[in-house]
Image (cartoon, rainbow, N blue to C red):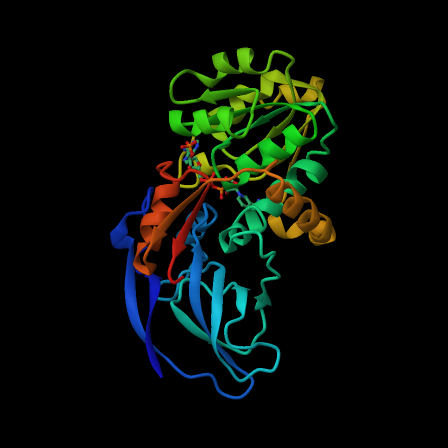
Length: 327
Ligand code: NAP
């Protein structure tokens, strides 16, 4: 028996979550018995999708739902040995016991840091890859606009589009993220949507219109983009973060989809098991040869998970926001 901690939601947020909506609870974690393993959290993910769940699906007074990478610290299951690193969806728990179902050993390339398996080679990476190439049906050389371009999904989308020879512009709300996107990630144009109305900046950033808009924000972003869409343009709808705390600006320009024959299609990360092998091969190569660059904002300390989640809605992350629980 070991003492460990869990992050609980103790109150449903009203609008933007606040630290007092969450609590750190001490629990007793039993030793692994026959067929079981005990896992210690190493890296935990905080993701925008968690916010809508706080309103309904996330049970109160129970570990926050979510995923991460952990280390097997006790094994009485022949499929795992102590020291194995595994992906899990066991939520925000410092340690937990599992029968092994839902645990996946991380097949790690020794040349890459473990943390990339939490973003570019993990859930946000496959979201970017499948969303852009399959749902967005990207063709080489097209005109691409990406929102939340400084974040985990957006930064990968933008760089895949560059690899495919596209003209790529992205939006972000911070000058330092804009500078990284231009100078390091090699985007053709970057818009700080907080500095100037997006509608005006888009005319300069996307002079040939938009063939693919990778939608991460919704509201006024979508409204500004719609009139700039080219005929038979595609909008893969990945997320709408501006609406997750409630409210969000109205979208008035949807009717332009008619004459411009625009297709909008939502999708989720788990839609692409058929692309997984090609994704891992492409992304591993791109990371190793430096064609995909990344940023990470890592908060040290299990108890900082609520701060990390709230920070996503304040733009505090550059690239993927992660919580480091152990080395
Ligand atoms: P992220 O972009 O790394 O982090 C969130 C960023 O969103 C913030 O840093 C902030 O960047 C921006 N933001 C926050 N509030 C905003 C607002 N009101 N208006 C405009 N921008 C805002 O997060 P991520 O994990 O990569 O997720 C990005 C989007 O993809 C989200 O919409 C998420 O729900 C979606 N997603 C969907 C799936 C799926 O399966 N469909 C999977 C993963 C993610 P700035 O500082 O630049 O404003």
